[in-house]
Length: 205
Image (cartoon, rainbow, N blue to C red):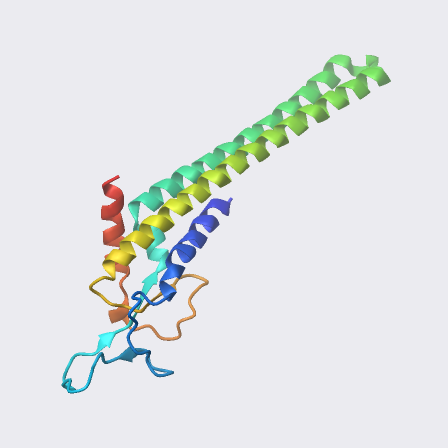
């Protein structure tokens, strides 16, 4: 089952999406349409000043694969989901064995009333197994969303602090199935900084 992995991938998109807004309230003049970089200058400023990049990007796949805490929690959640599936399958196997044993014991002596009663009991037990699975998956889903919220909160806090001396106005995201950037200048890739920083953040917990 890939449900948990899909959820965790989605959260990284949501967690970083907030950075599409401009970081500072005292906004610098917007770049002209079609311009990805802008020279931060004013009257009398030398034309030899270095160009200041206003855009950076982060690779979501790398965050998912290289932040130890995310990898660990994802493994735990996937293990819980697998355990739920195994318990459900075991329950159904138990019902099948119970049915086979009933038929073997009763054989030709089984009455219509006994058969109907047993069928009702079997259906009730099946419903109980299905209901338990649904409850467990719901609990797992809630746990996953709490995990997502925690990741999102810490990413926001880290990136807001990280950007204080970077002055990026936009930080874009890229990843499998989400890569809409036709061209990416690798010098604007801040993924390594984010991975290193987030690993430090989670190591303190």
